[in-house]
Image 1 (cartoon, rainbow, N blue to C red):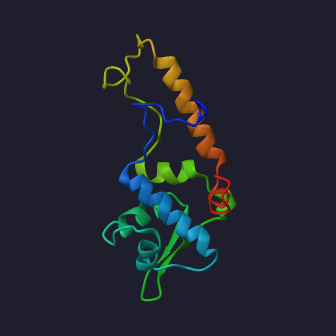
Image 2: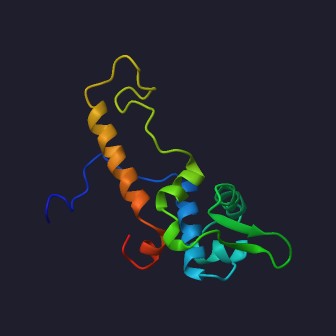
Image 3: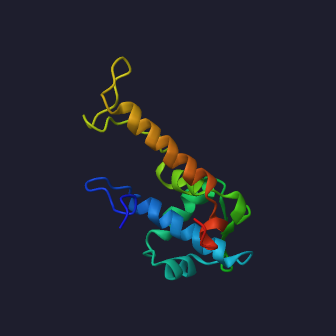
Length: 146
């Protein structure tokens, strides 16, 4: 196994539960195309607990990337084309801006007048991750290129 394929011990890149559910919900909508899905359908298709679907969909609707229709025939659909919605938009709709504000060594906000020795490296890594998420669209993921 090459060194890039191995997982770095102790280094984890994970979404919060809310971010995970938001990505799954948007993938369900992307797969549905122009069809509207009910909250129950989104939850069932993607294994999202029914109690979380309305909360997550409200985040996505507020961010302008999902559209909700109320009523008996209501449901959710993408507000824009799947090729026009990035994974970064989805994640940030659910969990807020992804800019690192906490020092990786101290566990508290970075000092403005003095940064730790690894600050620049972690900031660069964060920018790289954001760039990948920003250029990866829902369409890419649904088509298996994400």
